[in-house]
Amino acid sequence: MSSTTRILKIVGMVVGALFLSVISGYVAMNLTLEGDRIDVPVVIGLDLREASRQVREVGLKPRMAGEEYHVAFPKGTVIRQSPSGGSRVRKNKGVRFTISKGSDETLAPDLVGRPLTRAQRLLAEEGLILGSIAKVHTALPEGIVVAQSPSAGFPVRRGSAMNLLISLGEEERFYVMPNLVGQREEEAIAILREMGLEPRVTYQDFTGLPRRVVLQDPSFGTRIKEKEQVTLVVGQ
Figure 1 (cartoon, rainbow, N blue to C red):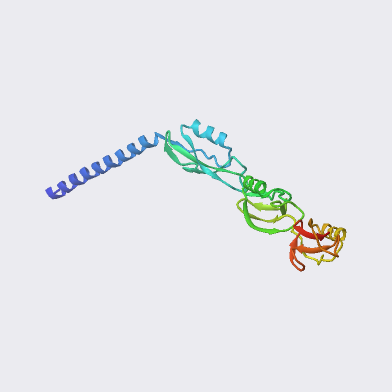
Figure 2 (cartoon, helix red, strand yellow; figure 1 turned 180 degrees about the vertical axis):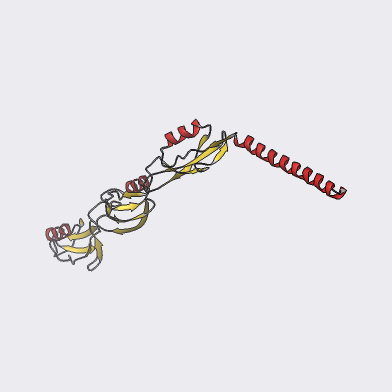
């Protein structure tokens, strides 16, 4: 065997030994690191208390990451976890849970007949928001809900809007002022009271017109609303 061949053989053996040493060190290091790692339990679908118990049992720390509505998971159960189940992590590492708030569907509350302020509170309690408002004169007091959309008991998603129709109260009645000049006092008063107006009578000396209306305010043809006062000047 030539000296060159012998040298190459020795170099090969040294390189091989070094390679084996590196591989052995890497494997040993990984074994050491893996020995300090824990399998993360799968807790998706479990309620928060049980999920926390299982995580603590293996030496990890449960953490809350938030809450979300979810139709498939009952309220209080784990929707997601991080790290995921089956992962290998170091002891005492935190496992973050996202918890279900239950279904995002609810039933529209019955708001008809309630004051607007109370209706707004009920909407907030159900996770709903106030949509558009329309107003109309009705026999109900001002500020009371007359109608709603969607109707009470209708399935709705939380966060959706409900539209309301609100009462303005009874509409004021308006009349055209009749001509009362020349009418007898008692007849004029009866006409005004029948119209829902309030007569106020004063007297002045007018020759030839005893107990008859000689002046009126508002004047004939004026637009006047219910319960407004009308002044009559009656001759004496």
